Amino acid sequence: MSKYGLLTVLLSLGMLVVGCAAPDDDLEPPLTIHDTAWQVTSYDDGDGNLVEVLAGTEITAHFARERADGGTVYGFAGCNEYHGVYNTSPEDNVWPGIDLVLTTNNNCTEPAGVMEQEQQYLTALIHSRKWQIDGLEMIFSKTEYDEESESDQDVILVTFEYTGEAEEFSGGEEEFIVPEDGLEFTYAFEDDEEGWIAGFADLPVDYNQELYELESEWRDLPDDLDGSGIYLQSHNRSDDLFMYLKRKVDGLEPGTTYEAIFKLDIASNVPEGLSGIGGSPGESVYIKAGATTTEPENVEDDQGWWRMNIDKGNQASEGADMIPNLTPDTVGQYELMTVDSAGREFEVTADETGTIWYIVGSDSGFEGLTTLYHDTISVILVPK
Image 1 (cartoon, rainbow, N blue to C red):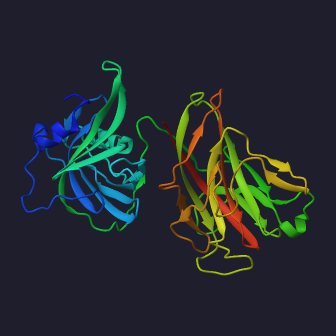
Image 2 (image 1 turned 180 degrees about the vertical axis):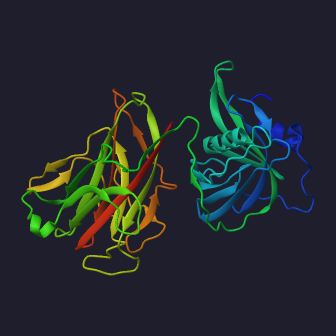
Image 3 (image 1 turned 30 degrees about the vertical axis):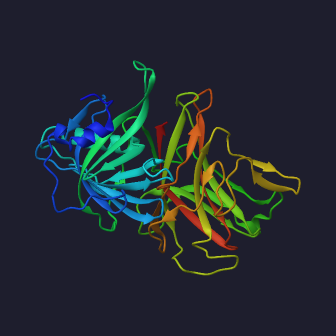
């Protein structure tokens, strides 16, 4: 089947064109994508072909609404469980897309081709930009310019059959999945800083080191934790202190815009729910991540303070160059917590030499001592 097609024609055929079973007569057709469950009947194989799901395998998708404009998409991709964030828009069946798809880490060998099918399905899922429901069938698609007809055409990416209502997502042990056209960068700091450089901002140029207690170094993680990381320490005496790590990345396509997804493993010694001067030592220390073509540096302002030359935002507020307030999964007495940019769209464009700069950090409203270990930093770049 061609990747271009009239969606209404395909829907009117009840998906029989891809050989799926007839839908359950007892099901009421859904009116929206929210809180629905589906079985995948076909998907784009990456070469413009709509292919059936392999015999003996099953792919499912559940859309659990968690807010007015979206929620969690989760299901089974043929070998691994997966979940991500889906977003809708005021134009009911057009959406910004599905972000941050994570999967479990199983490797299936039977039937032949099941892992390739899984990757192709998840890639099609991520690239979808429209959804359309007709009765008990649904199509995901995107718009693409067709040179032959010299017009925009709808490209069918995934077809589904309705199976009922979705249950609330209860969480899982999934890991990042990298789209076929994506790039993954992981820094585990086992031997050294791996090119990351530490810095501190939002403090006087002539700060007193005995008061601010600034410290950064590569060292072993605390007792009971394996491995090494980059240690950052500061005492916020200025009501607002930013400590960060930055790294230059070369070899990207010049002028190309990438969607950036961040995942940070950080060791903290602060449990949740504590209070302190200026705010909580946990919840008021805002973890941020971003990327920019400008090297992040301190610049002296007219008041004699070190400020960042990029737009990082302030504490919980978002800046053009950084995502704020990444949400931790767990916090404990020097236990590892994972923060990521799930559902937080962020783009960066490489300069004319194919270079960008990563920056991660903590923007503190807590007026006290903060100590953090960066154990692992992972970044996925997906060309737009």
